[in-house]
Amino acid sequence: MRTLQRATAALIYPAILCTGVACERADPPTKAPPRPGAMLLSSGAPASGFLLGGTAQLAQDPENPANDVIVIRTDVSPFYGTVSRTLNVQIALLDNMLEFKSFFQNRSCGGGSPRVQLAIDLNGDGVPDGNAFGYTGPPFAGCPPNNWQYDDVTDALPRWDLSQFVVNGFPPTGAICSTPPFSTDPAICPFQTHSGYIPWNVFKTVLSTLFPLHKVCSGALIDDSGWFPPADGTAFYDLFSAGRATWEDQFDIAGRGFAMGCGRPDDGDREVDGDKDHDHDHDADDDKFDSDRRERWKN
Image (tube, rainbow, N blue to C red; front, side, top):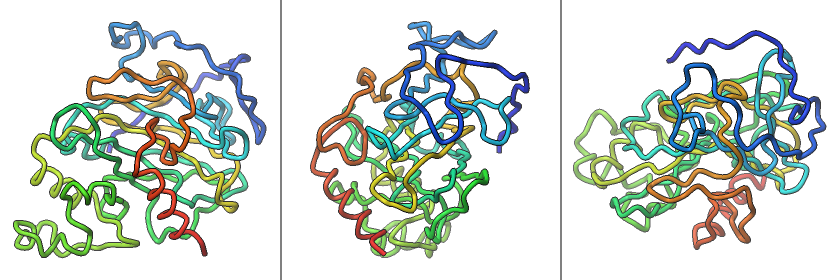
């Protein structure tokens, strides 16, 4: 795991600072000044290229005001927040590179949030065929409030929901270990599962084997828990790693919007009618995603 060194100087950002449980949706500058020595994209934005969307804003750590974090509120319109980045890599290159810290202020996690969401093009045509969802670790019974916790979604726990890809030939969870060549691969079978979710290594192996031309277009950290009362409210996020970049502070914000990847231009910070998984696209997967999470968390 990478060792991340954080700046300790206390900075004040009056235009975009959010503190406590209240955060006004005042947009940050479209482009923060680059960290000295940082590599830049042709646009002049930092190469890390993290985009904030919805209620996601720059804020300060509730326990250490010297530390930049991101705050997301799910109790004010539009009731969700996103932090996204273009990836354009195959899944094997993301080992140990999808992780985040979270702090739930007087609330819990749950209802399908927070999650790391990967838009994946299965056949290399530049169009994502669906999203993979990686959640905080099982048993999916909520998270303690007012404490920082860490999640590496590429660890050995069954965190990943691949249900959007079954229609394209990704085996259902219960069929993976009866499907050649995985049925005879001791590196993945048998494997632990929970709520129909699978571990990263199984996800990676099956995807790479059955879809060798695939590409992970973009990655996003998403909190849209407003529909689920125990997880509704304010949460802070820090050290979100998505591929070869980690969000550390204000200098990693490239602007507002949503990263699309696979040759598509980034989308603006906008709401799309019917977009339940907040990938800035409305399709048949949205209603199923919403119904599945409501069924999973109805009790």
